[in-house]
Image (tube, rainbow, N blue to C red; front, side, top):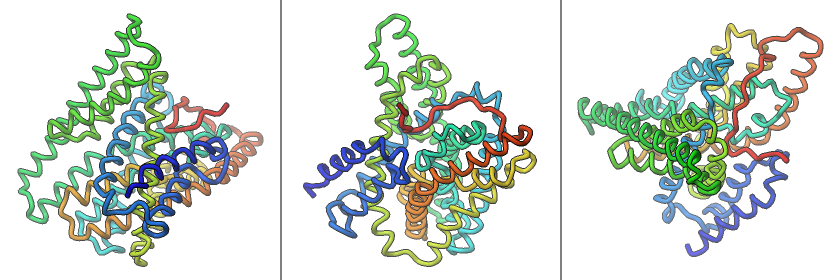
Length: 423
C-alpha cells in the first residue's frame, strides 16, 4: 500500500522522539515498535500486510542481522576477556549446547516434530538478544561480571549458531530426499568455507583502510564511521556471491576488524550502531505487523506451551547446570537464566530455515518462533528494569556485610548493542 513507507518512517520518528524516556521506563524501543506493528498490521488498520512485504521481511532482517553481527563481533574485545572469561565461556560453551539439546527434546515431545525439525527449532530459538533487556546491561550497580557476561553471550551466540543451523538444514534436506548426503556436505562446506574467506578478507581490508587512512590522515572522522557499515555489507555480499554464508562472513569480519583496528574501532562504529538501531526498529515493526499479528490468530496450546518453556526451563535449566561449581548464588543463577531474550537472530533464522529447507512442519516452527519472540519482547522488556534494580540491591546489601564472592569479581567493560549513551 502507498502508506507503508510513511507509516514506517513516522514510527521511527516517534520512537526516536521519546527514546530518552524509554531508556528509563518499562517500555523498551522493541516493545514500542512491535506494538506499532500490531496496530498497523492486518489485525487492526491493515496498512502493512503479508502479501506485500513477505520478500521485504527477509531482505530487511538479513541486512539488519549482518550489520548487527559485524558490530557485535567488533565490539567484543576478546583480549580483555582473558582476565575474566568464566561466565561467558560457561554460558556459551555449556549453556548454549544444552539449551539446544533441551529445546530439541521438548520440541519433539510437545510439538510432535521429527528429530531434524526439533533441532532446527531449538537452534533458531537459542540465540539471545541483550538489546531487548537493555536495562540489565546498562544498570551500573549490577556486578560487572554478570552484566558483561550476559552482554558477551548475546554478542557471540548468534554468530556461533549459524554453522549448526546450516548443518541442521542440510540434514533436513537429506532426510526428505531433497539432496544427497554428499551434496549436503558440499553445500555446508561451501557455506562455511566461503563465509569464512569473505569474513577474513573483508575484516583485514576494513582494518587496513582504517589503520592506513588514520595514520596518513586520509580519512575524515565522518567517513571513518562509514567503514564498518560498508564492511558488514561487503562481507555479507562477497560471501553470498561466492556461495557462502553472509552471516558467518559478517561475524568473522567484525571480529577480525575489531581485533586489528582496536584503537579506532569504537570511534568508527558509531554510525554502524545507529544504522543497526534503525534497521532493528524497522524489523521489529514489520515483525509485529507481518509475522506476530497473523500468528496470534493461529496459536495452539502446544505452541503456547513450548513458547513459555523456551523462555523459562529450556533456558534456565542449562544455565543453572553451566554455573555449577562457580560459587554463584541462586539469585545470580536465576538472574542469568531469566535474561535470555529472543529477538532479531531468531526472526532471521526462522525465515531462512523455512525458505531454504523442506520442512514438513514449517508452519509450526514459524508460529512457535514468532510467538516466543513476541512473548520475550513483552516479558523481558517489562521485567528488565525492576529485576535489575532488585538484583542490584541484593548484591549491594550482600557486598556490604559478607566477604566478596563470585559475583564480586570485576569484568572488563564491553560496549552494548544499540545502547543509549547516558548524558
